[in-house]
Image 1 (spheres, rainbow, N blue to C red):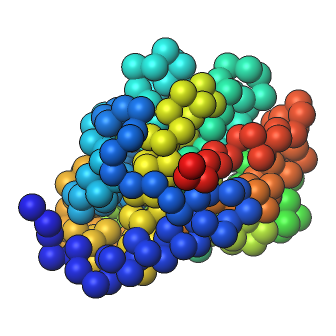
Image 2: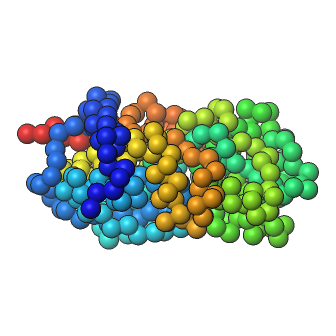
Length: 329
């Protein structure tokens, strides 16, 4: 059954996403369609975050079905938890995979990474440093010597926050990062186990509402504004064995990303279905950017930032890492 959203606006989004994909510098093709896929069912691990809404939209709105594909979604709390299952082939892709962890895994040889699509890019206040109302942390400088919770150590949060702090003449080396899962950050802050939390939506808005927490640092400020932070990833082995299936998945995600970036309403409606936030919070949270193309110049920003921070031993070949759909024969 088709939903009301699958009307002219959505059809236009699909057409535009496919058209853009056909001319991006990663070489995606607009060809293909139903039938002829190497496999017609994919299992995708996904985090309960706003940055991978596209996989849920594509499933709800029949965009995978349009490509002759069925997708089973399994929730995980950290994208890195799904790496072993991805390598073994128990799952076929990960939605909302943070680029830092996966580029590092690729660098170490743990996984030969293939990025199918972007899932989110940083916008102002999508990822913020929050403190309690009576905290003496009021400026970036005040974070020196403080304990700041991040979901994963030496990852996208500390990477981007350190860049912001450095730009504000703060010694980022003096910040004590503590690993705390997103869902436990508010409690850690309330108990005084950390001085601040670097949270992401929908946790930022939820924490502000429940604890009266305030923003100490805008996590989407320059020099990391619009930085790609997460994507839909798989292995190069999967894309080599299943190029048509990977391309079908990519087209569906591009279309869903286009829908999410042009119409907030379907995003607000679907968020409560796979996150713990209610509809009222979904209406006011800050959303990330939802890019509907995959280009090397955007990903190069991430690689350069990681290289400067010493998180990569060598720069990856992005033309190999970014999945390029084959032209139809």
